[in-house]
Length: 309
Ligand SMILES: [Zn+2]
Image 1: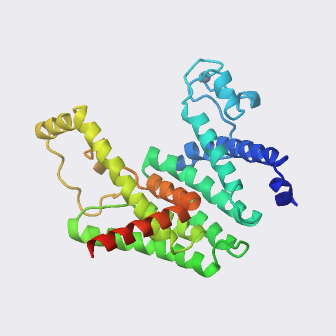
Image 2: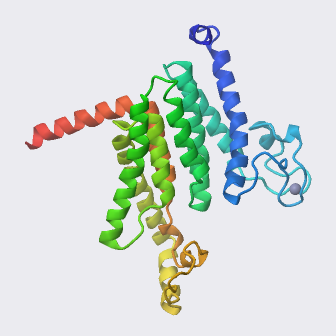
Image 3: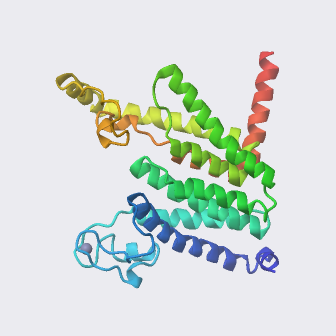
């Protein structure tokens, strides 16, 4: 019923508008999740208020996209600036919700992928802010992905299970191996669970190899750009001066709390690049352009093989 109406070009725009607006409203809720979940606070209560003056945000001050513009990005009471990231998350979620709605697949499949995409938005911004991926989103998301595979046709439950376990195992194995070779920590445990969550929604093959390739390529480019920027603005020279003046404290004693924030102090900012946002970006690119990207990749490698061999 819904699909037939949506397919009618005269009424399609109504459903597309609903998909975007519903997405923007959920994006407003994701802002709360992004802010509160990593702090261990409830995402449903208390109602939002200004962090500076405690002014309770009224319903008309909380309309996605519109209120931020109407308030000119400031608290109505104390005029403290409100980050433009709030309306940006709402806009992004609205556009992604519209994009999922437009996918030429059954409604149940689109609903499952909608939950997946919302999860990716929340994880991305939490990982940017705190360098962590809450297990409620990664492991909880993987459970939802596996459960939804019984109601959808995008992936079989076998492929979903293989994707969840395989996604986790691949990154866990890679980081373990990397740790043995370099004695460094390459990725956090949150990334393993997140990749498993991605596999539970998109299946193991060809999703996982395609997504890890996209994530590593783009993550490397971003990491390189971040390093060049730190170098160009003199942050690296400044950091090296400080390190030379005050050598780092001796390593912690056995049994010290490993989660202690102390050990992160010496890590310079330009080295702290979260990987979760790049996994999310790769997953979205695969979801919306996967077929095109894989065809392009196959043609390019065939072309290369023909020329070289
Ligand atoms: Zn205020």
